[in-house]
Image 1 (tube, helix red, strand yellow):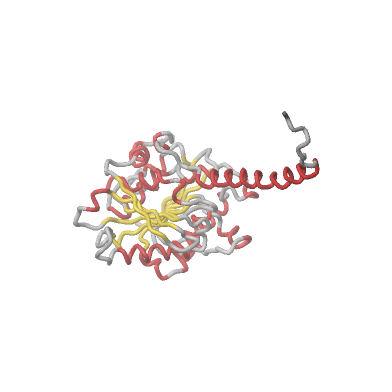
Image 2 (cartoon, one colour; image 1 turned 90 degrees about the vertical axis):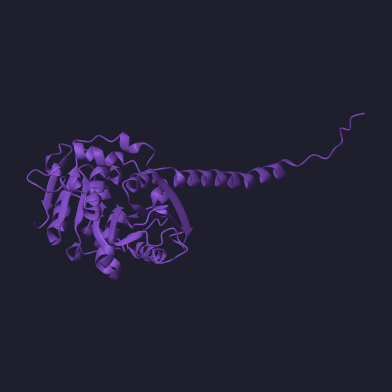
Length: 318
């Protein structure tokens, strides 16, 4: 016989349970959403095949080379957390050293969000190094990783033992990382190891002095430097370095230099849209690639004639 006299939970108790459960559910949803956004790739596989190019050499160096690439990682303390190193597979059995490129993240960025770019760089014969540091502007963590990589170059138990060429090290970074490039080049003794650099849409010198803890002085740069920015954006919201400030910074630099702005590109797209010329610069500066040099040298440098760029300037002191 059915018992109809079972005690029933009072309505107010049910309400308490619901009210205490809702925040937990919301927190879980928010947490999942944050993890998704934090790990969502900023650059997808095949990205370089979708970027419009305006000239032959830009296209060549953007598409990557034929070398197979491998990846290894090692742990670091916060805020670096993890170092990702991409390198040509042949390095493991070769008897020569390779040039190295250090990559500095923009605000909130991390290497694992744009690994296809690292792979493209490495396919051209570079060791390419990035971190999970989301605030690289001061340059401190990049210098730490540079020293760690140089230590591995002297460690007989490392795959990088005698495989890093300390005479040919490059540095690039986007946004805050672009400002960080200037800081590494001008505030640390380790700047002596950097042979060439490429800041991509860097936070301007003016803005860093106004509102950040990673201010820099571009006049102190000593190595060859190539600066890119886009033409679209709102200066008031820091989405692009305006031409006036870009020219001002450029004019202060006495080292060999070049600059250009990619037409129609906003701040975020400058992370990768000029990648063909980033690679051409490093191939020339760090690997003595004569064909890559034609982008920047000679009677008619390709960069000056590319219809996808404007405000180009080249001053190499030759």
